[in-house]
Structures are given as structure tokens and as C-alpha cells.
Length: 441
Figure (spheres, rainbow, N blue to C red):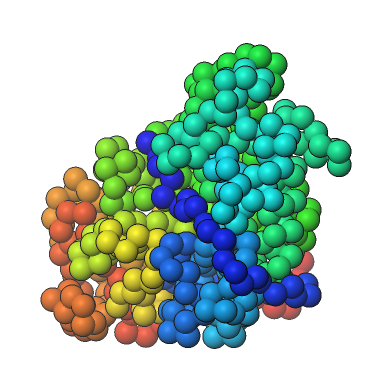
């Protein structure tokens, strides 16, 4: 079962973000492998710290926390984002958004204008129409559930709840911080977590009801359609952690709805698919999610764990490298705050030579080839395996786990169960150039 670790309740700050003029979206070139992403939505929001900015800039895709009025260290969020992009012009920065829950009291809340409109229009989810009070949030954090579907009353501007919420985020997040590359919408579930009167017709639908699922899905489909329209040239990400969960199919309206998203806790938690269903089930979900999003497929493959458990990290990173997502490691102690960096991130594998593999390569071990090296992963339950590499490769030279990253030249490697490794080529592969001067034959 998913939880909601992204959400934090902001407080009002005295400083306000500076209003800036709109900037054109940066062109994005997919980086070489391994591709690194990050979720830094917690902690003290010290995005103005130059050391932190340099760490963030090493990631290709990142999600940052924000709320109206946030001015880290007295600087505007816009200037902090620009500072990150000055270090890495190819970095993509997204701000966190959430449409499914809020505090019902606007007092002392930086989201007061949004809450006031929800209260005025009775856009909460109720057991029956507006009776019984707002349905408490499924997360048990003191919040209330928003009816973020298109089946809520329209205001004087003709906006229902999800229309207004989308426009509010564009106005309060994007318009003030046009350097961002888009918004990340949390909790884009395929069905509700709570029961309620989603259609405002007096019928309390259980969370498992297909009709309730259809209402929720219609709301998220509207969010992505409208946010793309209001933020041309920007990408829109989703929390896609329950897409294809346990082999379930994806609603047709969710196909090609988002430009990427977060596969949260793919490894490292008791509710991780790999923990209870195995590596193959995790990879099936991963591959399916990659197919479901638009290019450039900005998917973050998220793993939780102990930063000194290097074997588990290599297992997760190598699993991620079997497809084209951006790998993110979240420390159990730090949560979604700070950047955890590993020696393997410094390996330049270059471009992928072959597409994501669909079968194991040798003795149940999976392999993917890149211009400058290879990645191997030994799935959980496959036992220790020694594989012949079919050539000479070089281990990485690192300080974190020198027994593995020894810089040694090898023609075979032994991988423990639930393990992975990156190896470099002695000389990069020369990729063939496209033929020229073709004639019809």
C-alpha cells in the first residue's frame, strides 16, 4: 500500500517570492548513463545554499518543494533555480504539487487562498453532497480529502475544483518561477483511497467502486490536459507508483497523459513490489510505466535504504539501468532531503548500445551494454552467480566499497544474490554512423 511521504504542510513566511517575467523552456538533451534523478522536497528548503545547489545540479531531473511565499535565505525560488541551471544548463527542475488533500483551516497556511476557495465552493469530498463534513484524508495526517474531480460545482468563472486547482498552481508556482521545467503532481492514483460522494449526487461510493475510480481518473486527466495547455513547452510529471501495481492494467486515459513521473520506493520498503512479489514483478511494473509516459520519459526510479549498503544500491542502480529511467537513492535517515552520492554515479557509461533487455543474458543474470561499459544485475532469488563477460572489462575505481570497485581488470565477475555491478570497457565502442549517399535498389 502506498503512503504519502511527499506531503508536508507549509507555513507562512514573511518574505515573498519576486515576480519575474516568463522565460522560454530550456531544451533538454537526455544525459549519458547512469542517469541520476532526485527528490528533495523536505528538510529546511535551503535551496539558496551554494553547496546544496552544486549537489542538486549533479542530478539531471529533480523535484523540489515549494509553497507560496517561499524565499530560501531571503532569495527568490526563481533565482535559486536559475543558479542550479547555471551550473548544469541541462538540469530539469520540477516543483511539487498535490490536489487530493489539504488542511480545511486556512489560518496560518501559505495555501490559504486555495483553501478559502475550496471552503467557499464546498469542494471537499463529503459522504453525501455537502453533508457529514469533509472526508478525512486517507493518510491520517489531519488533512481533509479534496474532491478533485470534474463533478464539483462550478464557480463564477466556470471552473470546477480541478480546473481551479490547476490554474491556482500555475499562477502561484509557475508564473512566479518560470525557470521551472514543470510541475510534479503527487498521488496520481488509479482509484480513490477513501469512499465519498464523488459525483455530488448523494451516493456514497466505496473506494473500490469503478464509478469512484472513473471520477478520480477524470480529475487527473483534466489536470494534465489543462496544465500542458497553460504551461506550453513544459513537462508534467506524476507520482506513478501505483500504475501497473500488482500487474493491474492502466486506465486508457492515463496512457501518454504525463511526461514522466516517480516510481516511488521500488526497492527498500516493506511495501515495495520487489519485497513481496520479486524482481520480475518490479521490472514488469517499471517497463510498463516507461511505455505509458510521453517522451522524453522523465521517470525517476526511487530506492530507499542505508547509504552504506553499497550492494543494495548497486542492485537498484543496475536494475534501473536495464531501462531508461533516472535513478534516485533516498536515505532512510534523511528522507526526501539532501543528495546522496555514490562512486557509481561518476561512471560515464555513455549511450545505450541496445534497447532495454527482455530476457536474462547468462545464468539468470541480466545485462545491458553501453558505449563505455556494461551493467549487470543478479535478481533476488537467483543465488550467487559467476558469469563470463566475453571480453576484458575494468571495474570502477572507488573509495566507498573498494573490495568491489577495485579498478581491477576482469574477464568474469561473481555476483551475489540481489547484486549488481557497472563495468567499463577498455576502449569505448565506436557506434556506426548512418549510411550516406543511399541509392534505390
